[in-house]
Image 1: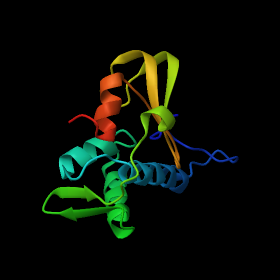
Image 2: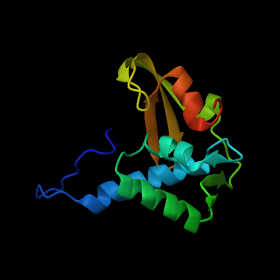
Image 3: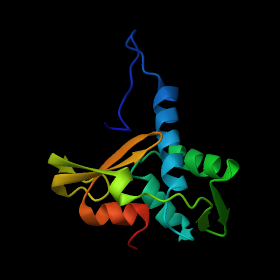
Length: 137
């Protein structure tokens, strides 16, 4: 699913709030599961860009995450407060097919998807899934 795609209701009118809510919920769920003690704001934005490239939604995700106590932000540093990390054997789903990595754009025959409470995020390649979750820097 393209999280930046248009959503239309039964009457054909776009519902921007529904699309925003999906992306915000997915972004919050991702930030809550990052395996970092701290990361730069730029690195946090890099992770959020796997959900949305809209700077307004990115800002909303960061603001909401701080408001809800998911992260602390100080002087360009983001500190996730949760210690509920993505478990590769349980929270990462592997699918075979013809994919493009959501982070780097590389072509993939095996896609890795993160199963978050707010929905599925991916596909990612084997190195990008580790980068997104914080297993590799």
